[in-house]
Image (cartoon, rainbow, N blue to C red; front, side):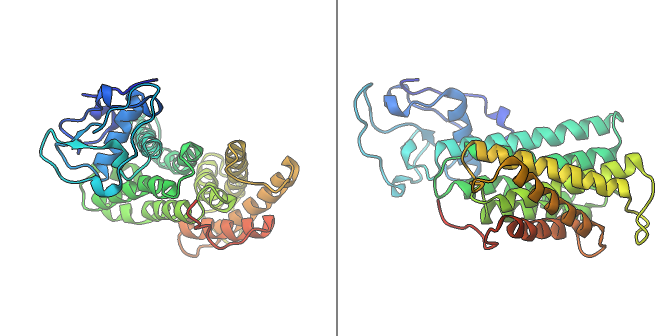
Length: 342
């Protein structure tokens, strides 16, 4: 839409506490090519405030006028952002994060919070087993986050803005380890011990952060590795507990059914996410057809499931690292991180 929008409320909807006390976008201040919908603008403001880019009490208002149909004056550089008195002016163009990236990141954070809330609420009301609730959260958190990746811009900073989501998750887990997030602790802990928050769940989010920044959407290596860690490992536990049956001779905990659940879950989610990103031209499959891609991903899933059987280290580390190596081998890709800022 043409023109700007004024925003005066609705910060609580984003679940954020540190927000400007006088946020607004001057209606007459945005040119036609810079109009921002109300909801997107609110998300941008919330993201910038949460990241500490906008001091409390600042008014986010364009400092120049741009009449409809006329070019806007050149944008000011980042050096124009400064601390000013309440009611002062900060150019929107001077904010260091692209509005679209900030909005998508906040949406991803809100979605992750909602996903956790739904399952913890069900478990809290005894409508679902707490163990099942934890594994459903485990299985879905990383894939849901990856679903948002195509909506970030192609800017150099996009992957780092996206990485802000797992960074905030890590901060919450650290708080939970000190007993400051009881609901989160209940969701991720088996026994209620606060130390568990910086165990497996913490490593899970660390891997999410590492693969997001290292590979981003430029390579399927990170996507497949995270899918195996989340959906594969998560469904192995869910299916193993639900179906039971014969166990592997070298393990008193791992079942054949659980391993099959790992392969099916890891393969299905990996295939879905790879083609989801390919649909938006985020990844290049090198001309491979569906059958070729499926066979390669099935092999990666089997290898990852076998590693999950080995009682060595934490599955949240060994599984994604194994999946990354085998994905690189299966698709003939370089294993080195794709860190080009593009």
